[in-house]
Length: 146
Image 1 (cartoon, rainbow, N blue to C red):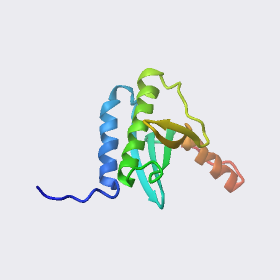
Image 2 (image 1 turned 45 degrees about the vertical axis):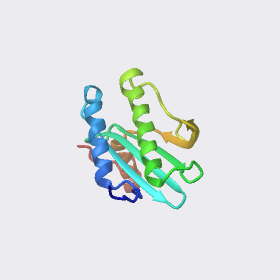
Image 3 (image 1 turned 90 degrees about the vertical axis):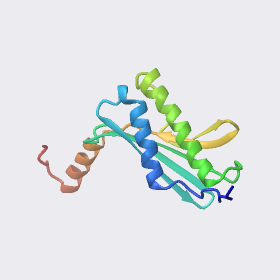
């Protein structure tokens, strides 16, 4: 038996594998959308962003979570996986049970699950239109829409 050092943090390859698993799990409700996951370890805080978006970003739904992992007696790795798991459960309700009619607050809100305290936020955007509006404002004139 070898002594293995605990993993320090989730790498991008693991995040990509988790996103692919979520794509498969919710395949029936995806409507040409896909998941992507990012995990960030910044000092005492672990943050995770799970994004559900379509190709042109006319549907763009980032759900973000953060936790002060040491206060919650977790490693950074455990905290990241905890947040991904919780957000996965949220998307299960959002996509399969509530017919996309269940939303998180757009500002950070406190949550507790399995005795872990953390914060979540999320907001559905039409990033394609947001970017177009930004271009119109920046250019000060109408722009051609494709």
